[in-house]
Image (tube, rainbow, N blue to C red; front, top):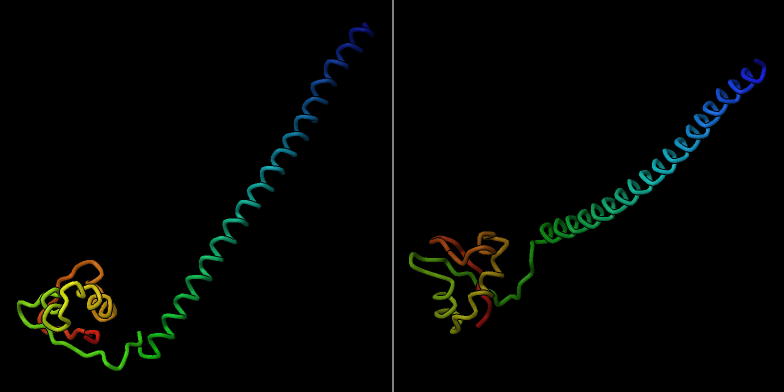
Length: 133
């Protein structure tokens, strides 16, 4: 019976040792995954911090431009009051002698009328900057 008892003890010890080994391996795997996750989180944080810094710099630059009077244009830039029936093309043709210059007019007025970024439609009463002829 001692042999049986001895065998029983060996059989009982083996699963206990295996469980301890598995637990140790599992802890090692969990630790490795945790380390990988922390490294990934740090890379994401660094990328976000970099982009946030760039955005803050761009915002500061815009605030400086706005505080300084916005975009600077040459002294020979003039204003034009939009009248009913006007279009950017008509204004460019009559005022600049080239209907293709409507894009210059639009670009010079994005800060005043942001809708010009998406549409060339102008409204009566708007005061547009025009480039020199």
